[in-house]
Image (cartoon, rainbow, N blue to C red; front, side, top):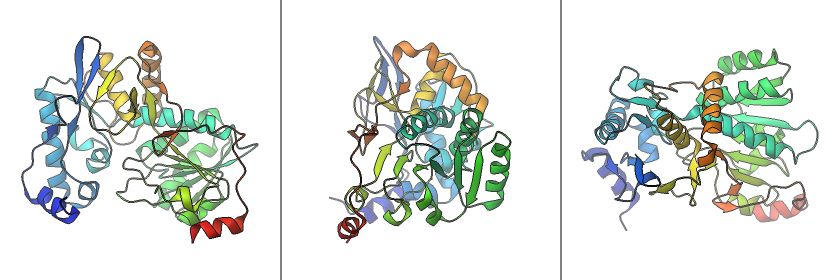
Length: 334
């Protein structure tokens, strides 16, 4: 096995081209190949830490390859979106449409939040971590259009947080802000929308009996939390069902599932969309448009997937067992 440090060094210095991830890496409708999955050969850490011009050149080469394969729209998956400023690095391209997939991700995350809060009783506190990001800001505004509950908005930039909170308070939402992850421990539901190569959410950040909806790819929760905090339910976010397609490739999902960002790209291609779609911050009108497309193509799927935790099917029903006493949790954590 090649040590990770050697792999990182090779990817950094060698001119490794983007690649279609194997002969079977495609998104098929019956009887036709309708999409391809292309890999940008950089690790998550490299996508966020190497010089931006170098990273964006690699991503641009992948967009070129998609265009040359006949794509009309290209979706930016995982950390390729933040590494290209939500796709804005390609705004001047007119040879192919680009979307970051964040509008449909925000819409599907709201649906997941609504289902999960049904098990939390009256007036739960929802923490949105990464609230000022592309998905987070859209999600917060989508929530405010339909609900008037309590939100804790968490991010690094306090000025942007206050502006977002002021915006949604006009809809009757009780919104508070924080730049400190420790404040997440007050929340009943934590929605994780951060962009990091590492696990950011730790045991001490979570209230007893909390639910975590992790929308991050690569994920910013660690599977060790299942042992350290058996009272906490961690749900994989941003997943949709696509039973009308054969999705083949190395994206580590169960059959007939796709990330919402990929599903957004698929919906735009199916509808014949021309030009760019979601770049930079996702907007509420974009989320509503993509939801209409999902309804139009509902015979192929595009609905919220059954909940999973670290890839395993779960039942997040209100009847889930009560958390063990606090002293048992300390023992497990040790």
